[in-house]
Length: 408
Image 1 (cartoon, rainbow, N blue to C red):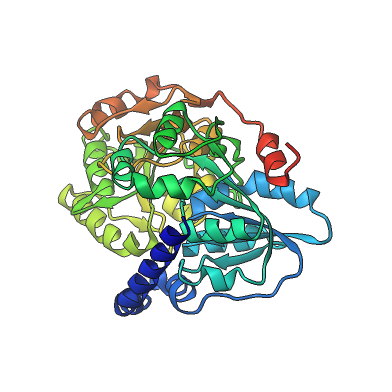
Image 2: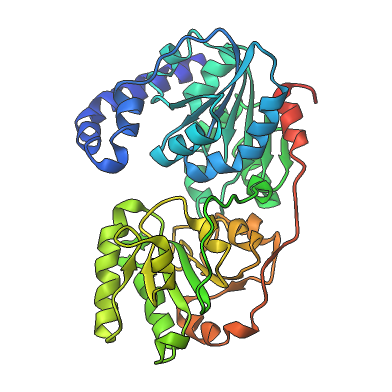
């Protein structure tokens, strides 16, 4: 095992050096301006005498799923204990910074830095989330005497064949994880075949999220249909594909039609999507988009067609929507998005069929609708027959907290 780890570490150091020119070029993109530099060039080294509970979560959604666990754990800490949170994306970092002011927040350094970065830290526990499987952090945490957990673990049927190709690697990696809490029985089966042990089927932590409303907007006089968390895949844009289906059933008198509001997933797409949506509306002789950054969110909500090109508004909009079309699910190989947040507000919920990353969450709901693009217009034409979506399951996170604390 020692030879394997040494050889692996040598390989990632070589890969890191070879990738430097590409990473440097990538670091000038707005999306990666801070994260790339902090992960691959100038990681945040810090001195801390307190014993640390270290949590690593990739991005915004994973950080959000940890909120109840972290807040509960924070209340149980002694004076000489702290929480350390690492992430790999800017959105995850920003959320962690605002949500956990008492925790230490930083970007996860690339694995070649980990032995030096962790050297002076005193670790009690290291917890990974979902599919964030990093060998060097696990190896170094175990050398520090920390317990190691993987929570909210998932290996979808789509990605499982890829994992199998590197089963020899994952068998060694899982030997450094003490306990795993996974989302579904199929995840447990996949994990076991890859060499994982001590696995408990727990459910998806996102079931315990309580969506927070940060601003209150007035409902429009008409129904509000929110097209949320949409993606681009290759040259296809979910926003355009969905809009084309909506336009098939909208009444000609727009004063009586639902307000159609788009909230795309990635900020770097806002400008291009606005152009494409306006081109489609113009081709159908319809009024142009109202754009939130150019007017106001309330004016955009009230317009026949609107684009929310700001972040952090989804829960505020779910709370006044009558129907939500949840994106990331109408094109293959994206995997869907968290349906718990819109379901919390009792909206009528429609998702595409490609939800392989969210199946455990949809299993906890009633009255949602799955539709491909071909049938979407027909379903929307009968939207008055759809029922509000309900959440039917909750989780007891005390089991995970006790395991992290070493009391169970």
